[in-house]
Length: 154
Image (cartoon, rainbow, N blue to C red):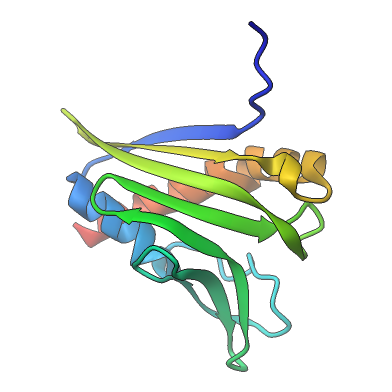
């Protein structure tokens, strides 16, 4: 049966228990998110994932303005985080929303972190977005930065 799944999927194993791996990804995203990965009108002050279902996933600029990137659909430490993502392939806030699911699975070496960014077809310029988030400047590079932050948090 042919698949129509076009999600961008990435995995990384971090040397930390799932509790710390989840905490650095969700509660401390601002420690590893690049300052130039921003869509707000002013320079990026911080990135926030509110720690509850229905919370916001947003950036705050140095001017105090907030730009909502998505919402929290599931916040289940230390095993699963599910977010919507409303930034399209032109890096504009869209009326549609893709989804980012991150799972944290204990393994002998620490925690396997699996990320799937799917339902990109719900956003404008989906092909451009898929190419951007699938490349080194997308989730590949972001997960390397995340892994470094987990090591530093140890």
